[in-house]
Length: 157
Image 1 (tube, rainbow, N blue to C red):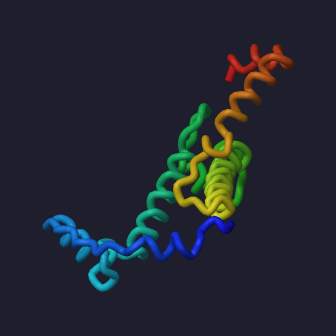
Image 2 (image 1 turned 180 degrees about the horizontal axis):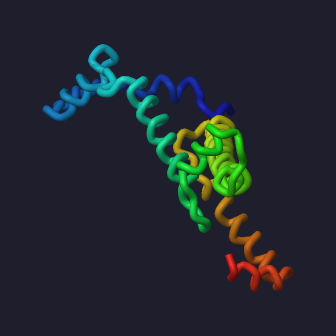
């Protein structure tokens, strides 16, 4: 016997449904979601330009902050005179690679998040859904258990 017999399908009658009384907030919400009326309040080029300006300021801040003293005038004098001094070597050896590594880390995390969202077909995916947080905790536990000298060196950092 099939799961849905023809007798069962004919015995079920469609009941007329009454239209639900729409409230004022439902009407305004349906008007707000129409494709004609939807428009970005801020154009995308303004957001992108603002983001690039903020990122440039943060790059300059990252280059300026560090343990050793640093002066931008020393960098400009070494560029004009084509000579190397301690400020330029500090910038090229320590601060610039650190800033580039920070930018590349942020870009790679953004790309990895986008890949996870595309693979899982979920716009709201977060690291705890795929176990990244738990894996990091497990890695910390394994490193602190098997490499105990590293644990004492981490106090120095």
